[in-house]
Length: 119
Image (cartoon, rainbow, N blue to C red; front, side):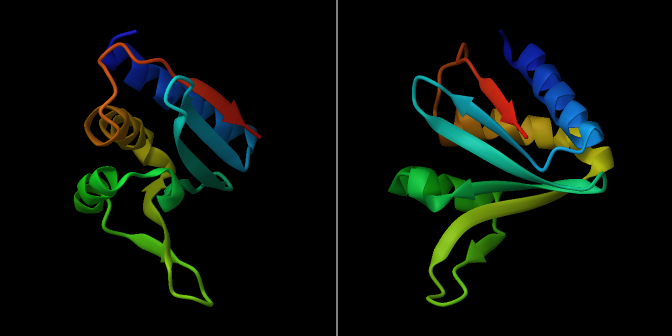
């Protein structure tokens, strides 16, 4: 699947999950086990969340430029994830971000595969 088809598919999966009332959706590359998770907030929007535990130091540096918003542990103040909010009307932008992260942050090849889990 090429980049444009993958972006379209990601957008469709986001839209279907949001309209179905799912609470989360995860896109994962099975070969690398890299993933991007979204928390779905009703039908209003979604939060893209990338845990720091799956990132190498280089990936985290590249991601910091793309996603400056973060989530920290309330007790320790330790950085736990990078986040970005999208309104329900911004699903295309969210899909493009997923593609960008897998290709530019995780450095996966152009023909990488994705699977989608939601619930």
